[in-house]
Image (cartoon, rainbow, N blue to C red; front, side):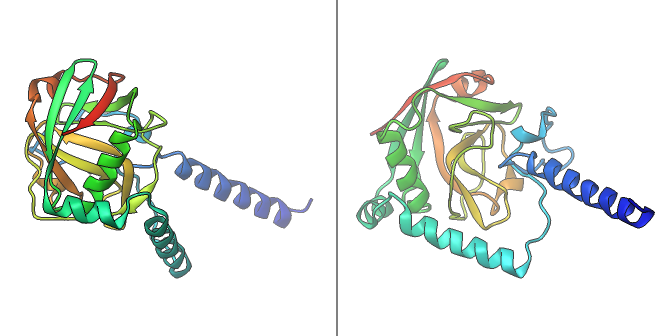
Length: 226
């Protein structure tokens, strides 16, 4: 093998190494609050809400649009259920190993997200899943893999609801393209840096003390809809 061939081989290996490392960063993340707003405990990258990914090529953007269309077309949420959740808010009770968390769901402001959440809850999807991420300002759970990388994709639904203490949000990369269809988070502090970047689809009405007690690994025993 001559020097030119050896150099080409080294470059190829380096490129594959970079691509492999990037793929391990995890599926979702939540942007770090501005300095001085709230403090954050550093955790492994795969537990974050946001992963830093390079800009998509035109071909990649076209493929993403096709995937979004396929996701919307194959969604188990029916048009009838979507319409029903537009006209009335529902109440959800997250039963955890530390106690119950009661939330009102914003049916008018995020109908598709709420309909998807309600269907999963009624189907028992969340039963015995865990809270895989806990920081001093947020808790996140609902991942079928339990490590922040699981779940599918659905369209985002931004609204003018501010993220306050007790707000319920859908996990995403924060890029405005798609959001996770199963992972959700509850803010423990006012988090205005999330406004307009994540779907806000509910608010805790009872059980904020339980939210504060949640630790990594605590179970979601089930979610009931009232």
